[in-house]
Structures are given as C-alpha cells and as structure tokens.
Image (cartoon, rainbow, N blue to C red; front, side, top):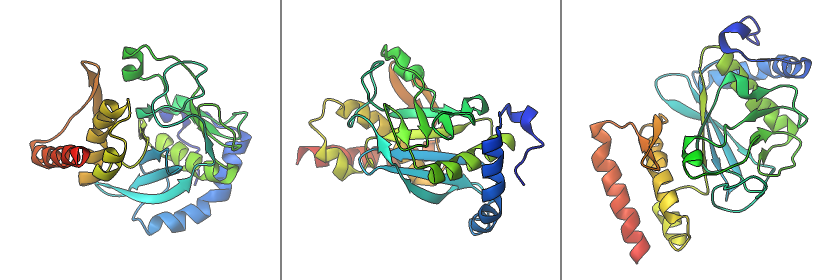
Length: 246
C-alpha cells in the first residue's frame, strides 16, 4: 500500500518515479517494519552526523522511536560547523523539520526533500542560503547526497509518514555524535558554544528516544523538557565540562 488515497491530507505531491519506487519497495518494507512493530506510514525521525557520514532513520511503532536503519551519506560538502551564507558550499547543522510541501518527487537529483534551511535560528544570525536538501545522485554543493537506492528508501518512508498524518518529521543535523569525549576533542573549535547548545537536544533524545520540541529564544535553541530530565542533563553537562578541562 502506497497510501495514494491520502494526498489532500498531507499535501504531498507524487510523480511517476515516486509512485513506482513506492510500489517497488512496499513489499520488502512491510516485512522489515514488522520486526520493529511498525508499518509503512508510521512517524519517522532523522539524525545526520557529518563526521561519520551517517544518516539515521528512526521509526515510531509505539510510544518511542526505534532505529530502523543507518545509511552511509554518499557526499556532503564543507567541513564541520554550520552553514553561514549562500555560496559557502557548507552543509547546515541544527534542528530542522520537513513538511509535505518540502518533498520533491520531480527533483533533478532523483528524489529529494528540502531541510528548511535557514530555520528561525539561522535567520537570527543572518545566515543565508536556500534549497539545502537530502537527495540522490551522489553529488553535493551544501546538501546531503545519497545514492539513488538509499534515497528511494528514505523518501518512501518519509512520504508515507506525511501522507498518513505526521504533520512534519524532524531532521537533527550534528557535526559528530555529541559524546563527552567528542566534545572534549573539539573543545578549541570556534563552534564549541554552538555545539554545546546542539548537545542539549542530542542528549534529550538519547534519554528517552523521543525528539524534543525545539524553539529559539535569545539566539539559542531551547527545548521543552520535563522536570525528570533536569538532573540527567545537568550531570551530562558537568561530565562534558570536566572532560574539556582535563
């Protein structure tokens, strides 16, 4: 089932390519997703790690998200650190979300979806740029490029989730896995304060496998958290700071 009966709900365009890809992949997805107590159309969440060239796709079969698959990123441009301006050939870092209108089944790069850069945080810092995507064709100027077979899988799960009622899916983009050790290794970077802010969101997901609600206040990402997380986050922050000064 390719959920083709729900286009008005999610405002998701389809193309002959996206429909044929969905039809091709649906039988294998049904069997794979069953092992995660999930089905095609369940909500998804994506994390990207630049340094290790990884894109994680998580799916929500119950109350929490489960890692469905980790894809190797074929190509991304730039280095560690956020995108700052149009033409810098840098890929973004931060917390983004993708609605149905951001999917492009007619992409020149096989299939793609727009990450929504610049988001509110980026605009607060005057950052510029547009059309930052996850797409196929394995070529990148600021985007995260996948091989065509990999982007077909990612796109099909994204399209199905949006058509089935997920209003948007989150994409969290990090320079690396935000462990205390990695933070300590990069403590002299000019981006360390920015990365410490990203680590707050990273840690929240690591605690309970639910991506946090994210807003921007006073030029920082701010996360909607329960009181039960406060002590855990404080302990993690303390450990990270101690690692940096050793």
